Length: 328
Image (cartoon, rainbow, N blue to C red; front, side):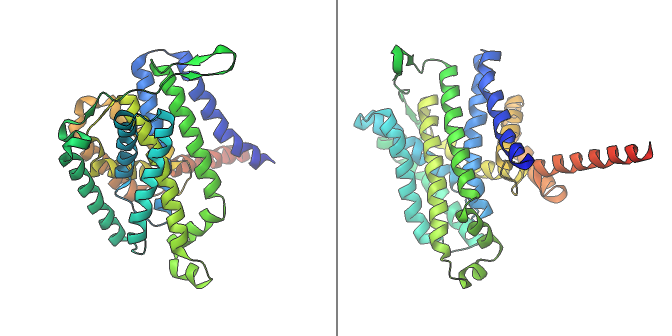
């Protein structure tokens, strides 16, 4: 009973804090940082199951870009309603993932990483050269925001300020966390974790690894496509430079630094490092060096990440308190 209560508290307390932030401050910059934190957290939580399954995906930002450009083009060129465009963006990203996954998921380890790296590089070049469709290096400008939402009793939500976008991405993040959590504690999650340990052993008991890899790969890509749609209509501008290989590597760093072996590791890593990146925005060109050095330090001295460091400190405090209690 106590363990079950603690599990729900871990979800509820951060949710309450995030809900109250717009009531505490109306500063547009702080709300913008909060939006970026939740967007990066959504991308990190959608990448974590892939890494835990042994799939080191260097093209996660490319699927994010597919969702972003698909949603923007469907609204701007086709005239599709934003809400349909958002769902379509997730589905289009999933279709790309299904095709690429069918061709590459039989490859394991370093080779899969190299294939996704190649796809990410190719896709960024395609965004730059397809000027008529994507705007090329100049980017896609003039992307409209989401339309107003009519609620019962004459209420209406208009996406004209940071607050509405803040609660929108909070809702998307909550949905992503719920989906990933339910999948990860299910049979699918257990099989994926087992495949990362020993895929041949899993296959020997009659499990088809390709089936489960495709399922987790496509599901997580759908979430990144939805995040891409939000990103496009929030910033209202897209450029190839936003979705380079470094963007995917940054997401990997978020998860590893936060704690790959904890469900909340990606969320904590994305939140912490996004805020740090904003605080040191004036030294943006040094960010790859800082993040790379941090990744090396964490890998060498704290492979369990920030979550593990906190757990170790908590255990030391508990043992210290117990020691002094017994002494007194």
